[in-house]
Image 1 (cartoon, rainbow, N blue to C red):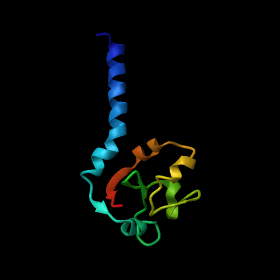
Image 2 (cartoon, helix red, strand yellow):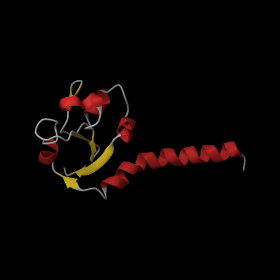
Image 3 (cartoon, rainbow, N blue to C red):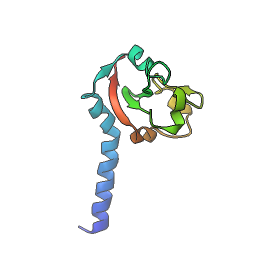
Amino acid sequence: MPENELLLIFIVCIHNSLRTLPKIMSSILKEFTRNQLALRNGQDKEEIWVAYEGVIYDVTESRLWRKGKHYEHWAGQDLTEELKDAPHTARVFQKFKAVGKLIV
């Protein structure tokens, strides 16, 4: 098989696994309630966390989330619905460590 075909197969496999990775990770992560997430807002506790599609991400180290605010978005909450209005896609969460699973 030519190298470029192998590369294409590899890229497709990586793409597919990135879409399912949050679901796989959420099944093995520690569970947190909405109230516990809300405390990680950059003010009540040092950690700055946000949730997306049931996975909680630590955005503490991001300069864009200083003091728990990112433009009109606040940390400590589920941003799943708000992402529709964002200028970026859900891929932005790949930059951050998943720290938990949001209990709904």
